[in-house]
Image 1 (cartoon, rainbow, N blue to C red):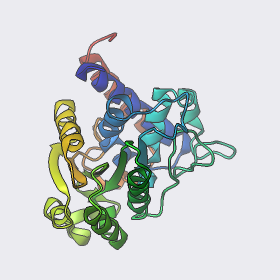
Image 2 (tube, helix red, strand yellow):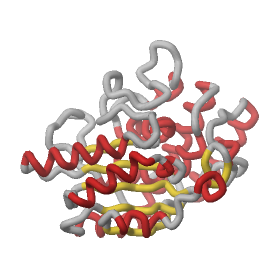
Image 3 (cartoon, rainbow, N blue to C red):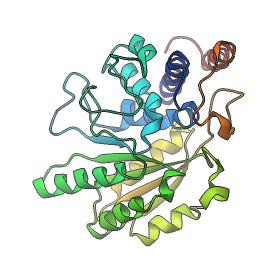
Image 4 (cartoon, rainbow, N blue to C red):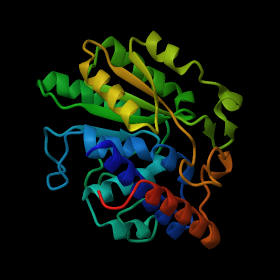
Length: 279
């Protein structure tokens, strides 16, 4: 995909997020929307994956360490062809394969169940080590939240990854500055995030999470980095794309009502129109 096509797809992913959370009357729209461009770039440009063969042993792996932003991952997976987009409306409903957090037993394309914050990165590190031990060349990506990295297990995993020089591992931190209780710097500051990862022997890249040229540059740089894992600190806007959700911690885990849903979808329709018609 070219950059315009990626931008259009990211907007569709955002529509899927808002639709899913509204339908469920529960979920986490803020951090899903801030990471929508990252999900889109990973699944439509960066990763070696095949929706028709989701268990391919040579595929790239992705672990959503901040598992509560499953609506973002689900929307990307649906638009990539892993399951019908219409299924997004079944989020969190009884009998649905779309659990509130990613569950690998129920959904193709999920490489690891996640949700307990801090634990997903450890699983991703294990996958990256496995690839090295087996002589495989697949890559492993894990998306963490900037509030999530307050968890100690994140840094245990980072220490191990840096020590073992896992250059097939890319950690992405969705740095939107907000968590459920407010600003991350006020709750328990993780800053400076880049210097912390550098101290654990990571190659660190700071980038704009909403600029596809910047994301391409960052992921290409990560791919070219040898002898150490990469951490991409993706500076983002919580609730990106929905006017009343942007930079509002209150939308971390709140579902829009019918009126708010209509406003949100209208916002995204305008963005879609601004990007032009057919690809």
